[in-house]
Image 1 (cartoon, one colour):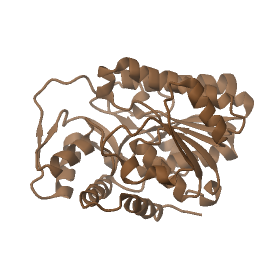
Image 2 (spheres, one colour; image 1 turned 120 degrees about the vertical axis):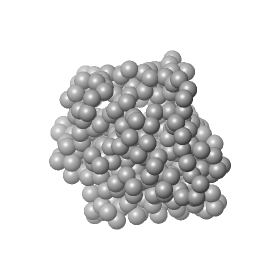
Image 3 (spheres, helix red, strand yellow; image 1 turned 90 degrees about the vertical axis):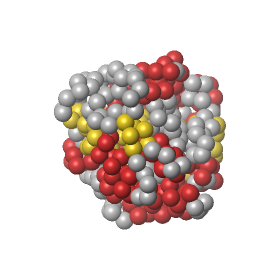
Length: 356
């Protein structure tokens, strides 16, 4: 599925490389032989996968910078001279977006504009992948699985900002980048889970913190339904999409869903029940009775296009994904080398793909 020969020596500029998904992407790209320059704010959490897996050590260059600083971003990209740009830098939390709406829109909207302006000034770039979110769709709160032609929207500031990022991408592609022969695609994944996520108000890290401290996990919305998937699932899709954009820019420059199979679209309560079983011991959860800001109750993705046109296919179901996640945190508790362990998890996942 992933062509290791394609990535060997390939120059990649990756924003958001200090985050959860960005750290996993950095490790994977390096293992494939790519030369990666990372551009991001310092690691947003403590602990963090970026630090624990020594991500900075696998990069050609590690740059701590803000996508809201257009001049700094442009210089960093031009100095890196990349062929592929992967944009992951974002304010990525729904609840945080209610607290800091200006920051959320500034980072996710103007940060995207700054990125595309930098691309236009960097002659080496041939393809850009903008990672948005499954929450970019106008959610009708029905059982409908959203496909790429559904309407863009967003109730909360985060979801709205990601919808804006999609519209900005479309405008830049049609107005500028396609005329310059630069491929541009957007990717919308489900709720990713996996080892090394330490964000606040996110189900897996909240659960791991609670279980490690022998406390009950408190759940806000146990009946909410989400498309859960291990972080390596959409990352595999992103890698394959980049390969195809380089080989056929016109055909693959569009929006793409990378969601799990239907049997991994489950309620929060089902997720945490499985998580409790995987963790074992005295792990438990309870429902919070406090009032919380609005969050979508149901969300599903239709990934038919990625399956048929990219030959991408989810490999790990929900139970497998949760078990691999729990194992990662238990190894972290033992002070193991998480760089080696994380790379081994990537290799384990690769065995289920067709690596050329």
